[in-house]
Amino acid sequence: MACAGATGTSGPIHWTYEGEEGPAHWGELGPDFETCGAGVEQSPIGLSSSATLNPADLMMNYQPTAMTIENNGHTIEVVYDDNGSTLTVDGIAYKLLKFHFHSLGEHTVDGARADAEMHLVHQSADGGYAVVGVLINAGAENANYAPVWDHLPATKTEPETVEGVSVNAADLLPVNQTYYRYNGSLTTPPCTEGVKWFMMSNPVEISADQLAAFQAIYDFNYRPTQPFNDREYLVTANMPATL
Picture 1 (tube, rainbow, N blue to C red):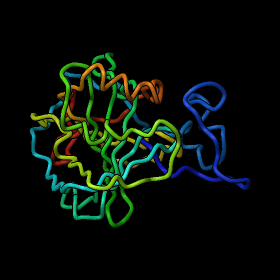
Picture 2 (cartoon, rainbow, N blue to C red):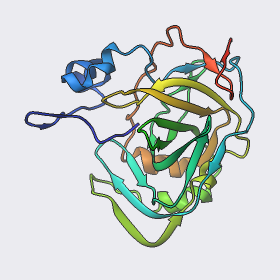
Picture 3 (cartoon, rainbow, N blue to C red):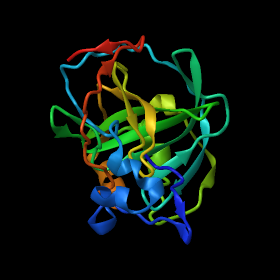
Picture 4 (spheres, rainbow, N blue to C red):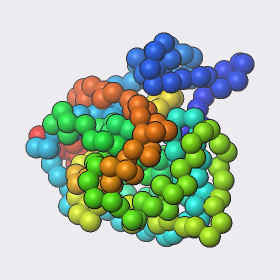
């Protein structure tokens, strides 16, 4: 999950997805990144299809947003308008801040990795995070993704609003919105924990050409799965559920 990133005495800490600044070493890059190595509730994880599956009951109130898009050096991200778009969980409203993409998928299901993955990042008034994750596979062309895909910035940019173009996060979700729920972290430094994760159990499809267009820019921007440790999958009422 992309984030602003921590800073050191000489500026932002540089991190990547491979080599000496890759995921295996994020926790060593600076004190602000220590949770990446020492955390016990890290994301992504290897999901089990036998885990408790929540019904399609998430309270999403998404409105269309102007197409404000950026390449932040780690992913392609759409910054959402402050237009009342929210996800309500356990009585708490989380404002939709942005959504972005990873290739390959970050979460696995029974060990299988999707072609890509989208994260819709939300934040509550008290600073808590909630993320809705959507697995993406190559298949049929997806017109709902065209407003984003038609404006993918190939190189690192600042957020730029494309005049006359809008997108609605609701259109990017699978039709069947059953999901797995667990407590985890940001998937990029500083790997902050306490994140409520809602992974859609059904993937969406985009065409092979659409997938290739993203992978021409980012084809290896995913973090490997992290130990599940003693966590449990959660049901909608936030009660533990066994596998």
